[in-house]
Length: 141
Image (cartoon, rainbow, N blue to C red; front, side, top):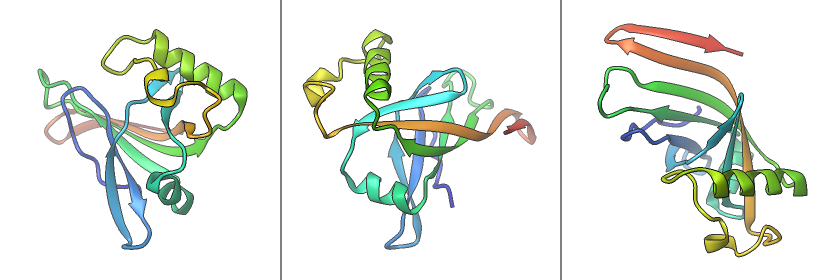
């Protein structure tokens, strides 16, 4: 189970999995996409870490509030990138990106070396663009 998808105004919402209850669990994610790979800056040792260890799949949805009939769904496999290079790259992407997704991670973690600073790498395996009621286009890896 990849998790429930919740739709928000132009922002990605996604899910994880709660193994203790055997149910989907929703979260708000803010990935930055670099080609076909999504990157999420997040706190490393949390409940989400345990959930992703049980099930690394999640779903994201995007919705433009001016065109609600065309949501985009991205089903991904998430994995932690704990390398210094991955952390530097992701930190820099968030610093350089405009708000509301971009921000200065130092306000949360102080430095890249903070052991609580984590990077999730997303690899999509399915993307669906809904073209109106009953119509959609699907890409699969």
